[in-house]
Image 1 (cartoon, rainbow, N blue to C red):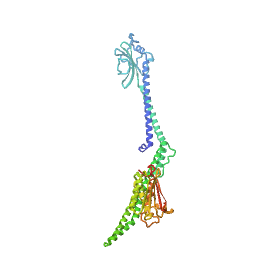
Image 2 (image 1 turned 180 degrees about the horizontal axis):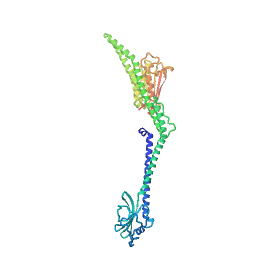
Image 3 (image 1 turned 60 degrees about the horizontal axis):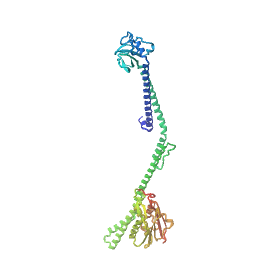
Image 4 (image 1 turned 30 degrees about the vertical axis):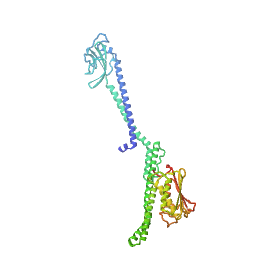
Length: 474
């Protein structure tokens, strides 16, 4: 029982039953009150229809105001139950009459014992010996009153019978409504049960791409289904982002272990050489320390690149702000010039500001790696040109070098992680171009490889400059 009332179906049926019960109670109360009022009016009207002068004359009183009193009979003040008075029309069953003269009962017929006297004309309801009476007192002469009364037992019995019938009918109606409400609420909630079963099937699997089909359902069920599907879509997106973040973390750990092994091995070997040969010549010790410094610098750069790649893979909570690309390109050129002073660096930017909205650290790492790649794979004392252009809604960054270029069949493969192309002996982690493509895509664009005017490689990155198209999360 408790489980049934705790269900939506049980609550709907209960509310419907209570509503109907309240309506039936109100209707019954109004009906009973109306019937009682009609009964009271009928009795009062019957009392008023009794001819007071005739009653008074039959009891030995005056016929009306100013009439001399006649023979008042021999019944005395109490009036005997067998004393006749007047024609039969004046003696309806259950009635009593009484003549009151100067405040005393002069005569009467069927007067109940213990009935109090009254000295005022009008209607009243009195109780005596456990019975209830309705009386009408009227004046028929100076100091003379005629009281006509009727027992209310029959009227109250009719009222009680109607009340009992209303209670039985109301109880039967409430039980019928309860059964119908339970049945009809089950029919009305059947689409919700189907929705529950469909949602249960989705929750029993690990595939969040499943959606709930509302079928032919009411508008409310369709709206609830749409909300559930929207929630599933958000959960799917959230689960995908979480999986991407975990995958990026695992990839970062694997990449770091893979790429740091070589410089760590070289660093360990150099440390061992210094420890085992304390008498190394100064120039040899300096060469070993310089090699260790290069290995440490390489590891730091590699860790920075791996960290940027990992954050880009997860794309979680990356800050997004307006970036002045001309200033960013100029800073990247100056940093590259200090690392590779033998290279001739050239930058071409528009005269006005070129702004893009995105992740500043990611954009700077992207440009740095483009320039570093050009310096490493161009001529030893060659020339690298960076060109920045505002295309109206997008920004292009082009980097040209004068190296051997990249064959068309290798231009897609070079963006894979740890891919160094044919220059296997060149320094570098093989992660720079992967980071370039990743950041370009995160900023709503991509990178393509072509041939520069000098025959070397040309990398052209296009990013969206407006904030609405950026897939980065705020």
